[in-house]
Amino acid sequence: MTRTRYALVGAGHRAQLYVEAIAGPHADRAELVAICEPNPVRAALHRDRLVEVGHPAPTLWAPDDLERMLAAERVDRVVITARDDLHAPLIVRALDAGVDVVVEKPLTIDAPSAAAIEDAVARTGRSVVLTFNYRYSPRNSALRQVIQEGRIGRVTSIDFSWMLDTKHGADYFRRWHREKQHSGGLLVHKASHHFDLVNWWLRDAPTRVFASGGLRFYGAENARARRLGERPARGTHDGDHDPFELDLRDDERLRSLYLDAESHDGYLRDRDVFGEGITIEDNLALVVDYASGATLSYSLNAHAPWEGYRVAVNGTEGRAELDVVERGAVLADEGLHPVLDPSAVADTGARSLRPQGERLLVQRHWEDAVEVEIDGGNGGHGGGDELLLADVFVGPGDDPLGRPAGWADGVRSIAVGIAGNLSLASGVPVLTSDLGIRLLES
Image 1 (cartoon, helix red, strand yellow):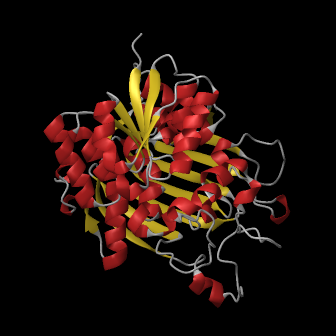
Image 2 (cartoon, helix red, strand yellow):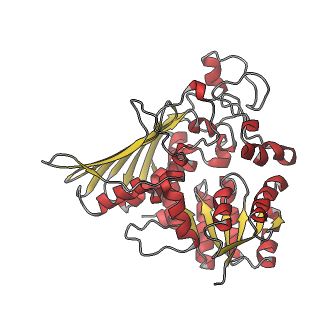
Image 3 (tube, one colour):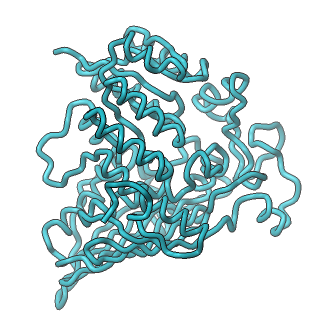
């Protein structure tokens, strides 16, 4: 079998998912022939991992040489895991060079760059696959099945609350995500996952967004208001640490990827969550109207004491409720586990009033509630990563749930966050058809 020739663009932590997939379960179909990354330490780390398991060493390139790399290495497909604001120019350059793209969410962070991707797809006819792994999580697939089968009738509204705890949520305020110019804020970087789920559950498109929110817990101003006192500028330091600090020396991979690479680009992965310069929000609430007439009420809190989400879908014939606890508590004496995302950690078996777990209930009018069985999985995003990678590297098979996502799905997901950011700035609702993206025009 001829293997597909891949190039990796961006070599941070998320790149590991694809490197391990190519090095292991999908080695018979894929080979990583090049890595494009400005930081030589991070690029070499992923190259050496492949060599360690017996693969040829991919060549290393700088971003300015992207087109030359694609031609020299005869690349069929690029995987983009670079910083969010860099996605669009990299996607467009790859498409114009005649190469298909796999890109991490979000597709991009603003309307002009989304329109540029739209133009490039139309101009080149190339493929852009977006890796929405939450679609593949068994619990989210189960809710899609319930709605698709019509068990609650036509959907009229959705209540969706997402809690990021003080391990996982805080981490967005340490790194480049804290600057909206790079990430689009949590409404784009994180919540695009959630908005894509709603779009996918409903098979619908958002039309109007009203948002409210602000930075109310993290950041220097909030620290002064709560009299937190003087704090180290970063978590990697000698002496005592508080639960909000990340010491990169405590985890070998974070040390190798970031602490050892600082001298090349000055990027600090462990900044103080109560420091200056944070421009994203940590509390957000949205009302989103859909073309079908359904309404979404959505909230996100990035400093909750537990992590998980609750979804209630109201329909003309009943209601479905999905409750997920990914981490029931963050305890001060347990330290900051290097795996900050609890969806990638199996249940430890510890019991509490809020145990880790998931439950999907369906209750039709005039009937008792029934529980829908969820075929759960371990690993990142509730088992979604493994299923997603199979679709990326093997190709999607017959999937009645329609889980594989393309660039158009990516546009619809970020449209909610982009419109939400505009609404936060203006204080008024924003129509997605006014964003200047043809796909969203009525």
